[in-house]
Image 1: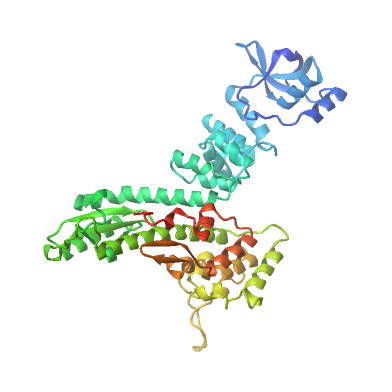
Image 2: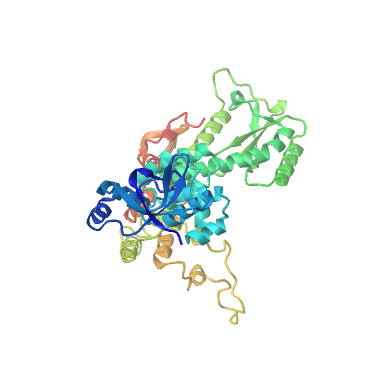
Length: 478
């Protein structure tokens, strides 16, 4: 058994690798030590180079004792090796409620650096392997920005979400928005950009081997004819792209082809072919043909729609992950019923109802049900409906609270195309959205309702609604 020895307080020092840097409020502990002395010994190891003892267990008692004016402390001198020292300090601190998430993350990483597996760390600390894995990812985030994000109210789920980004630059950019109303929008943008980069890297070697990239300066002139119906989704496979290119070249075998990548929506490859000479169009210098004007209008319209599609993704994400604090479910359900079921002014006969998509496709998606209706098994009565309804499919699902089901029902049908530009939120005029052409429609009511339920609109959404977003400028996106 190790012997307890009184060691002068001047010969003790905090272990430099203790994961707990902030010892918290020591006022109460200091007062207790002044009144009663040290009731539990410290565990220390000898540091021969410094001629000191390093405190392994009892750092808060050590610091409070100094404040209380004690000159020596009861200590057990241990001969544990370096790995055991670190592991002991980590085990002592990992379960403390006042340890920050980042300190936990650093502690787990330190244990892994010492050779512990995630399973061993889980067994020693009591945290699940999933928690250990997620915390370790957080150490890759910028520590300074991490602390700022926590102070702004960023949740642990927000921070874990950021680790889905592969690029450190993207991670730290989005981290600056964590804890603000623009976080979800920036996170969505970064994930879309990451997916675009991956798909472009995967597909570009194939398309570049078959044709040249369209030069920036040759867009919107009469040299190239766009194949509007032949864009290729970047989510497609390499083999599908090869077949697509082969099909295009069969259509016009004797003309050159060029391509360009398009980021908006889910990402596309756009193809252009050199027009046959008989279709060549002489355009006076400095003037645009009607076809060119149509291309510009179409491109600008797609550019505007790309921002509304981002807004849809934000609302969809909110609805799919909607939760309420204890006691709020009844309140939220009441708001849904008043706004959508009981009110003659703001019901399905109002603006949202006029724009509502009554198909259950979006409802299925948001409730995470199979995309296609489920056929009834062993149907005895042939006159009965062949398929289960959405509500029959979710009946009895314990992981689907009523408030989320009702939220999806209220929002799903009005959350997608009703706010697309062609549905009248802004009047498209002469190739751009005219100032002052704002028209209230169902999307305005939809946002009012979501805000009532705790939704935080991003700056982008506010600007889209009030007409100040830069995408509405005549030359935006061209």
